[in-house]
Image (cartoon, rainbow, N blue to C red):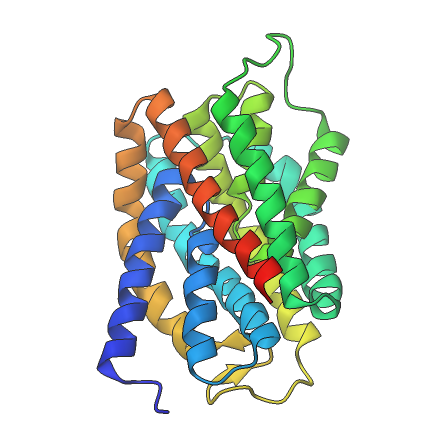
Length: 272
């Protein structure tokens, strides 16, 4: 089936607009919304179930290369990005992303990846909704601790195709980083996460036969081009909206989104 049919292009444009807005609003890179829809689109084009999940995850992660740049620019203009935290966590993020993308991702089955996604995101959403106040004395760890945290964030992000906000935002707020700063900093962390994991996906899938015209290993380049173009236009609007909302609204919106996506992916994991 020809990729460039108008109904399909329209679906990908809408998906890109929606995920771009969420990337700016919640600092999540949009990947957790994108993966289920891309899985459905690829499955309808004859890609086997296990491969469609992996291609959706890899392609979703690659779009964050573009979305994060647009989103972080809007947050930076408002002075919300904690760049010292970006510098502290980025080295670990690169290491974790490479380990996931070039190693564990290729070895694990699609339903296992879906299950990991659902369980971990459910936990993150519960912690956010509990709104338990962190100990006033708790602060972000030193350089070694930030590197370790970054490694875990980069690795988990690579397994589920998300920009890391579902881990990094709760982690930073737990360490008494204000929610708006945590969201903005998470958006900035999205670029090294996406870069390291995308390189890993290319290496891990280099010898795979093309599942569809335009696919390179786990990456589906036509979908990447359409979604990335649409998403970068909406990320700044999402960032501006985030700064207009109060902290309580932002936390509830973040948690409810995570619950919905976690439920879908848990169903996907056990239904296969």
